[in-house]
Length: 342
DNA sequence: CTCCTGTCAC
DNA sequence: GTGACGGGAG
Image: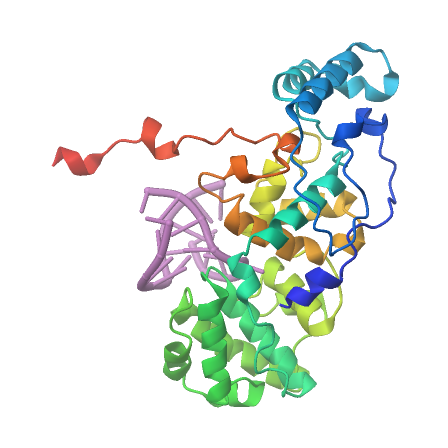
């Protein structure tokens, strides 16, 4: 879990797929976001001018009226209305969202200007001294501990405590008392369950993999407590192999808000992180698969929050179908209050 | 009240 | 697909 992965990934990759969309026309000059801006760019935000937004709406409306067969999806009443109403450019039916690279660049800038909790992880803290086998095991343990746990600080400390007690290896973890593990990892979510899982994982690693961790995605998934999210993360962090996108709750939520992922054959968003992963992988260039996670996680923690997203602060809201649509709290409208009745 | 870099059993 | 696992923060 290193931030360096984010930093080292090129901002843009080449386009392996054709972008067939209305915006293939050159945009108005004002809205041209410099592509391939280098990392040190101190360029100000890409907040579009209102004038540009207006013109874009006009362009969309105009395009809708044309009979271009390539864009017949635009004639769908729903999309048409959508485009007119909200100034949003939508994605193709086959899922290659237009302007995704601008969105990513915009998010990257927001991420660099505003610090996210996820950035305060000290990657592999104290793990550098470990042997490769132990380091991989530590990555697996750390990934397990991180799930549903707020702040990498807590999870980092738990891992640190395990390390200090010499439990960051399959051999020692296998012998350790479950209650001991439980107390050492305490602040993390679901610590009781995870303590048991850690022992089981250690035993499996010891008996089947000579104290190492499984080296394939499928074998990782067989471990108790290891699901798709953790398995992909571990493949990246421990084995430096990218088998797929690591989709957590943030990637899932943000991707859906952006209209980046659709259920096959529908215009509806995905319902599970796994659906999101598959959908994202269909169009997102592989070069971005690693960096997209930290990018969207930090974005999701600070701006595109689950509750009351801060759309006003978001510089890519013009590309977001969901911008400013979640203003009211769901509890305020249709919730009953049993407490008061008593 | 919901949410947290999810996963598992039912 | 739904609930449980956990406790704390917003």
